[in-house]
Amino acid sequence: KKLMETEGLKERIGSVGNQFALTSILGFLMSIPVFIAKEGSRFGEFTTLFKTNPVVSFNLIASGLYFYGYNELATMTLKKTGAVTQSVANTAKRVIVIVGVALMLGESLDPIKLLGCAIGIGGVLLYSIIDNLVKA
Image 1: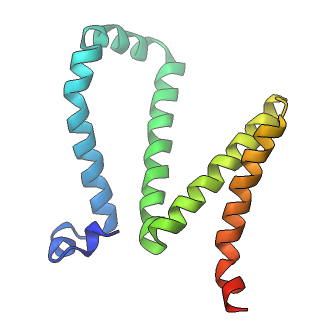
Image 2 (image 1 turned 135 degrees about the vertical axis):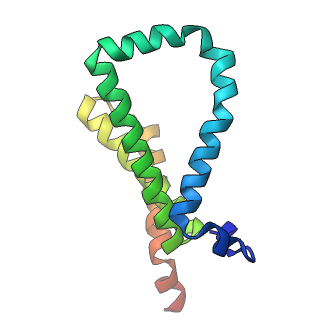
């Protein structure tokens, strides 16, 4: 958000969507040398697996689209709200995912896990009502 408030930059980039697209492209380009150095020798093996196994190709494409959509939504949300609100919402999301996965997998929620989730949820709750508490 702060980047888009820089003098003259907003006019050159356009919208937050364009900013997200630029950062995604730059991130991809910057990861190419790392990919080549670490996994370049196995790229042929990967392309063969991608072409012959429909489950791998579907899951790879679906996860990429979901990740892009999530980040696009997060960028648009950041424009509408603010960095602190986005951070708190991200924390709440993590707590919900941890508890939800534990319930779905039948994993026990030890007291220390419950305490951590309670602190996270309580912090989110406190953040959402703090303005009303201070005014009263």
